[in-house]
Length: 76
Image 1 (spheres, rainbow, N blue to C red):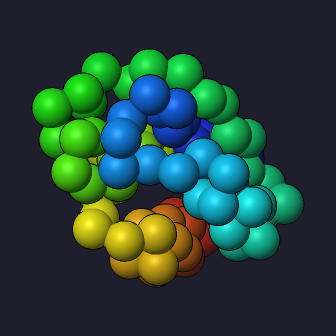
Image 2: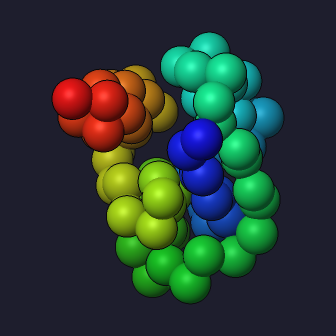
């Protein structure tokens, strides 16, 4: 099971579009939405935590790509 934490207050993050994309990656993802204490960078970049590891990107596609790669790395 993978735990993803996303802040719904960060200005660069659109929960409505990002969460469905994350759910398409794997059925083994638990998504939690709350403040993750990355307020400064969250103003201009998408930030989330994957198993407590920060994933940061300029676009949703970049973040999805990083999550997918990290999950593949965990499996190997």
